[in-house]
Picture: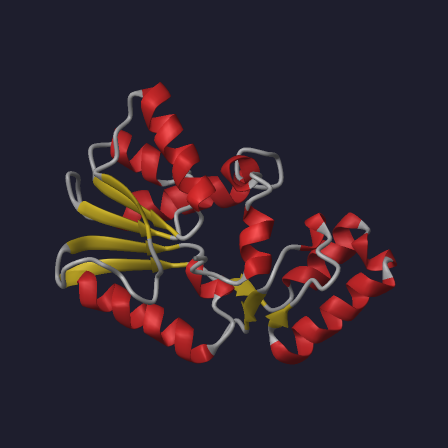
Length: 203
């Protein structure tokens, strides 16, 4: 049984997420995220839960630095990729498990840090985003740190103009809906047009 909507799972079953940040379009995001983590994480060997961490793009470097990292993701393919990388690289994570950011099977007050670098933009309902944040707060220790990522409301507009997708009338309809509601939909399942998501206002 899928923990996420079918179209989101199908998007990630293409298997591209494990290499997204290593390409030229993802390098800035990877380096900036790593810099923010390095500056704000408690010292190793702190206990970190990387929730929605895909195949472990951030989990493995943190583990290599001496952190105790638990990787949780709803997509079985990502977990398989993470287990394969752990086996071939020799970098072990504390755990690699399937899970839902809204309902974490983690004891309260057990995390020094929680990473929510994906779930908040795939939970299109406000109540689901609040629940994911509540769960993150529940599992954190009293002085624990939460890192959360969101996608800006204008992401499709900027991406479409810079990449040429804006020539496509269907893409322009997607952008119009994004700007009006924040809910990003890709009804034609075009692989370059992302998948169901919520795009936040900067505020």
